[in-house]
Structure formats: structure tokens, C-alpha cells
Image 1: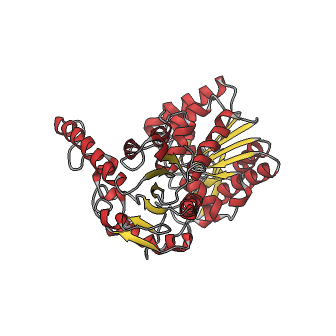
Image 2: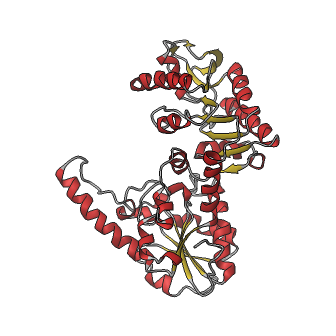
Image 3: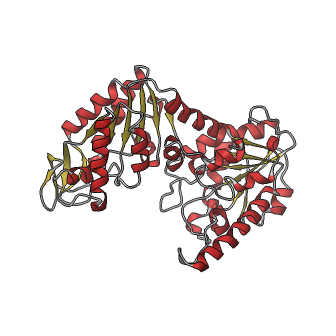
Length: 416
């Protein structure tokens, strides 16, 4: 069943969205991309004459109530985005009365799902690797089913529209689907778009294919890097992981971030890229700083010859040219992770160079997919969201999908 085939008139729909939006110290949303992304699904339900129950997580409260992560903070923003009044249920597991009284066209927002450890299904307060943990995990699995069953009891149908958490087998993203018949559960419009965008990257590759992987650690990206080595023509590795590669090749990197236990992994990536005929683009120069701060003193230096007491915080001018050259002629582009500490305005140049090159390639007919929180934040910071083909709301989910893994949130609906 697809969402466009389903008529929500007279139905209560419970929708898993990803409203894990960034908030400032006053609880105000600083980037509403994820809320805007869910609107087509939510409005389709309301326009059909359905009642809407929205559920999401926020942050990592680790199974405990934490006001800092309360979804009550975004209730008014959600109401404004939907142009409809929104009622808030302060306890997601005890919202039976609020759900029962919900009428067509009305909206109920549930409190943070992760205030309950049952959502993630992880035992709390028990050490991993112990017999007690194994027992607690078994018990938690049963509790997770009960939690999912409670959530399911609020509604007639279930819509999974949280691509950002589709790679997790949580109560609200996968287990809940067991309590609905095949014709009562479906992917939302955002999920459909996300799945299609990944298919476009993996199954409909137009060459040359350039992937840009940024971020601080090789360890968090190694699975996707290895998978991409069998698919791409150009692979740009940037951000903090630059210095692990530089160190692995005998370079001096000063105080730059490095994973000393991943030097062999870095050398293996270089070797595999060569064997696969992939053009691996690594930083040759960088903007080094004498402290981790926006107002630091800076100098341009080789990425493998950074003076002691200095650290690389952005890609240098020669590196930016090399990145642009590998991007501008591409026909398929994937970007995940910035080229520097883009949160500091003085170190956004590398990421901006990537964004500019992607926009240029997209204007020339390339399909460009931007994914991962930091890359999306970059594109939005530069005001260039309308100059790329598709912006994914998922970080980990996007990476796992591109690695070729089956996402539990998709499998729960499609029965894969």
C-alpha cells in the first residue's frame, strides 16, 4: 500500500517523523528542514479528512525524562507549519485518552519517545557483555513489543516517514508495524523520496560518479568508503579524516585530529582505490590554526607538514581546486560531511568550495544528493538548498542504505 493510494478519511493515523531538530539555548528551532520535509505526508492525512498523531524522538535522553529534550518545545512550530492546532500529550505511553478524543483534522503530538528505554530497546544501567545484560536485553525485547503495541493502539493506520531513524529497529520505527495489517501501514512521502534518491545513486549511476566523504573520523565512515570504492570514479576524503591519512603516509600533522589506530585502515583505502581505478582525492594543503577557535591565528601549510602546536581546521586553496575539478564534471554526486570546521565562519571555505562545485555540476545536469546533518547544515548555511538535486534528512540511515544494508524501517513496511 502506498500513501497516495490510501484514503485517510475518518481514520486516525500515527506517523513516525524525525523531528529531532536543533534547538538554541532558548528552545527555539535553528533549522526546521526536518519539519518541512514531513509536511507533505502530514498534510495529505489532514486534507483527506484524517486525524493525525505525530511521534518522534529528540536528542539522546537515554531512556529518562529530560525537559531539555521535550517535544513540547516545538509544538507551536509544528502547529504553525501545519496551519492547524496541535494538542500535546506529555507522556507518549499514556496518551490513550488524547488519542481517543481526536477528531478529523485534529493533531496530537506525543512526547519524546526516547524518554522510554523501550523505544530503543536497550537495557539501562546494566553493563554490556555480562549475563545480567543478556537477561535484561531479553526482557527489554518483550517490553519493547508492549510499548510498540501501546503506540499502535492509538491509531487505525501507521505511516513511517522518519528516514533519519529508518536504520534503527526501534519500537516506533519497525516493531510497531507488526500490529498493523499490510494495507494499514505504508511509507510516507518523504520516505518514498529518500528511498528513490538512494536508488538513483546506486542503481541509476550516470558517470562520472563523485562521492565526497567528510567528517572527523575514518572509523565512522569506513563501511561506506569501502562500499563506494566499488562504485565511484572519484572519491574525495576531507575534513578531520584528512590528517589520519596524512599521518598514515608519514606526514607531520601537529595537533590535528587523528585516529592512530586507523592508520592501517587509511593505507588500505589508498591501496584499494588504486586497485579499483578510483581517483582518490586527498587534501594536499590546509588552513591550520593555533587553537580550536574562530578567532585563531591561521596559516596555509601542507596537510602533511603542519607545525607543532597548530591544527588543520579547513581545506587549503590547492585542495579546494582539486575538489572542484573532481566535482564539476561529474554526473552523479554524493556529499556527506564537511571539509572543515564549518561552524566557525573563518573555516567554511573548503565546504563552500564543495557546495559551489556541486551547484555548478547540478546546473549542468548532474544528480546531486546531499546527506548527513552537517552537509545539510552547510548547504542551508550557504543558502544553496535550491541548487542541488536532493537533500536527504537522514545521516546514518542514508549511509547504511548506500552501504547496501536493508533498513529495518523500510523492511517493516515492505516485508523485506
